Length: 217
Image (cartoon, rainbow, N blue to C red; front, side, top):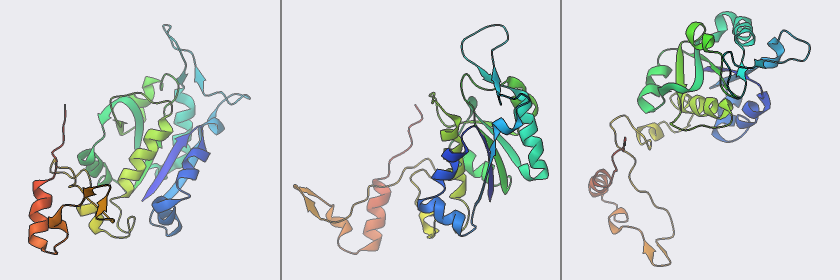
């Protein structure tokens, strides 16, 4: 799987994929990362890519021109184009699976400031995605969340594929069961005895009973 990130801060993206599981996946060729610096596609000597809002209002918007040219530079290699935006579809595990199955290459556009000229959403993208009902300072954070989530579907990304079967958010509206590690007793807080006996069927039943359901409220 390949990800193109259209961003003002390429170093934020590359630093994330330098370490941990994502770093290993990149080194092993399981996922490929490409950053596209939006300022390289400005049409002015100051590399300005934002401007004031027509009709008035606080803040600045990313301009459609630089984003259009950045996408054009990718040619056929842009795959599916996702815009990270608070007004997009709410990103969850079901949507992640749907998006993952739609392509092997994705281009993620990070929003900043007051957002992005609406013509980007109207004419240049395949989907508009929001990672939650809240506001953050950089669309790069949202882009990394989406890329990381999609990457976990890629065979070899996690190493042990059975981890996917017990994800904290599966597609049956259940959350993962409680899990424990050593020591058995910490300050009087002990591990449930059923987990210690080695009776796999009893453990399975306990885990199923103690799963939480997802709260949509």
